Length: 154
Image (cartoon, rainbow, N blue to C red; front, top):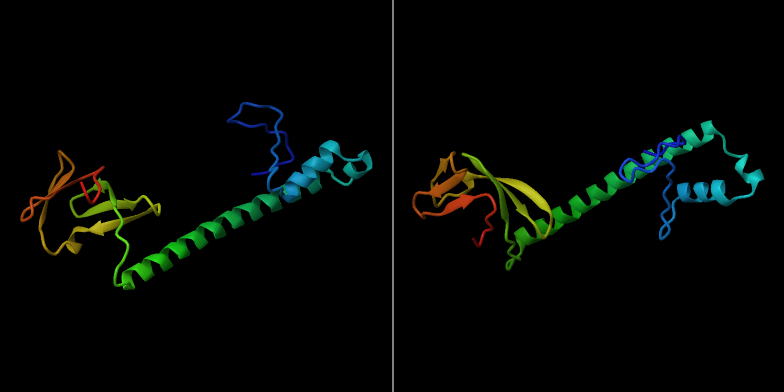
């Protein structure tokens, strides 16, 4: 959240702090540059209220842009997975088991940074028994043992 108040930087423990995006400057970078290095007459264009409004507007705009980017990435991943589901020779990923429960697995596909739940009912070829002390699932027919940290190849 941008602010005209000199709040410092909590992570760097700096009292007087501002940030520049040198490689890809934003409107706020130009304002800060103008305030720090501009002509004194130009600086009089800015007062606390105008900087507060601009800070709020730019904070909201950046947040919206970040959310739009995340949504765009999600949509592209879904399009890719939809194409893979329809393909005759789909790419095989190695899901990582993050969590084991009595009725489902939480898995992640690391190469795509996606997570999801896999219900045990999806495994029609085996019946799994949950061992809560070890947080493992044991396949009765296949003897397959599923636990957190395993990949599909483990």
